[in-house]
Amino acid sequence: MAGAIHRCLPCGGCRWIAWLRLDKRAELVKLYVSPQARGSGTARDLLSYAEHLLCEQGVAEAELFCTAGNVRAQRFYAREGWRLSRSFEDALWLPDDVAGRFTVETHCYRKHLGFR
Image (cartoon, rainbow, N blue to C red; front, side):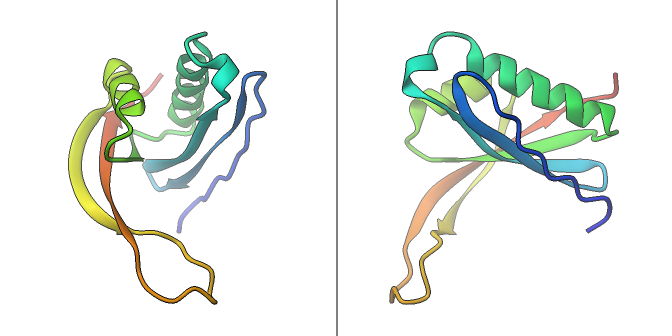
């Protein structure tokens, strides 16, 4: 893992956002906005800020994952220029003392960030 960057950005209406940089690509790991902040532009501003910071780090392309069926998130990412690249069954994390394996259909979105 070359040049990993972990950041959490506190923001008024959201919990946090984080990403992991791998060479010139990055994965947006978490983006949560509190229910009270939904529709206020907070998520758009936060995502735009994350894209800007990644761009400044020289990241050319980023990806993020969204559970299939989360229509609100899917529409938001599409509006912000993220494109669905693939869908797959992803295993959910389970504590060690929980038996079994549970999967959920997951969408992978990608966006070319370019350089600023």
